[in-house]
Image (cartoon, one colour):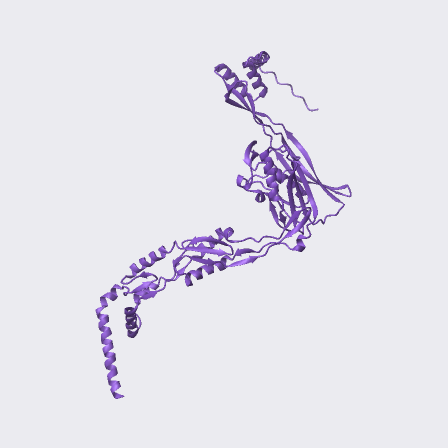
Length: 519
């Protein structure tokens, strides 16, 4: 026992001197603070690097990972994003300090062990990755339509005069808060630095509709039709296409229906052709021309069903397929027909065309008294006759006339809702009001001539804005004796009028009339 006690101080002294000597030999290296050999941070060899060099190397390493691809999935849907999109970053930069301190901290035995371990195998420090919460939230918000799967409501199909119930399907909705956490946890704990797939956290949304609800849909609430038999082929196709897109729509209690959403976009890919539409007081050719007759016909079926009208606009100019104030215009997103199912049961819209007629019928559960009748009456309040706009056409000679655009009479009107009970009028209330702008006829007038005097006369005639004057002038210049005589008479009358006005200006002022005293 005494022999052991004597040797122990010698061993400790020997170990202490040896390690102290090693520390003295490396004093300058310690001051330079370089990382020992065979040390890695992630996949980066940081052997012999100073703190600044290691920071640059780690930054380059993280930057090189920014283009890694991630597939974010929800059920059958997915989107491809990059690590940069997720805000990839290193969340443990202190790992550099740990690498610098390897073999330099702890007691003498721990330091010695660290250095001996490095001689046997390299030391690898893990890089912990993180993702930016705000960036992920924004990314998921922008891609919500690409990730969510809307529930398909239970529906109805009407064939051969009877309804068949169509089963719906569950939907999937991204839980953004939980998905952000799932992505961050994956990046920190599971990611191996390669392209990867991450399942987002979702919740199931159930479809609307039950057999019990849908079985209530059996009664006609309102029906209306209009005539488009005189339409050109393109317009007729557009009317049919619009009716087909609305046909079969099921609207549950409290739901709003948008005609624009149902029938757009207006392009060839969606089945539309070029046809006439109103634009800035004229008729132009656009894809979907005629769709307003679809919305107008549906509007009248809807108001007869007494559903809630949320948004309706009249046309800028009068239409001919319904009376004033009975129309409903569609114009991009600025004019739409929207209504809400304010009944306690689902409603079904049937729409189709046949024999140049478009039909809409609203089916639901009839709860109104059978002796109650609803109708609508159009009242025209005022009319404004259109004028004519004369356009000089240098491409045609004098005597040429062509109608560029027809005229439209302006109107103001209102629609009355009339309720009768047992055939006796119970109420008459104003339902809407409308204003339709007048639109001038646009007439192209040929003015091409080599005769300067004739050109001047046509220009002066057009400046009057009077179609008859222009036609008479053109006829006179073309050699029509009657027109020439009329033109000469008009010129003489104008000269006489000018002379009379000049004479009146030279006459002395008249005496003022005497005042009448109050009695």
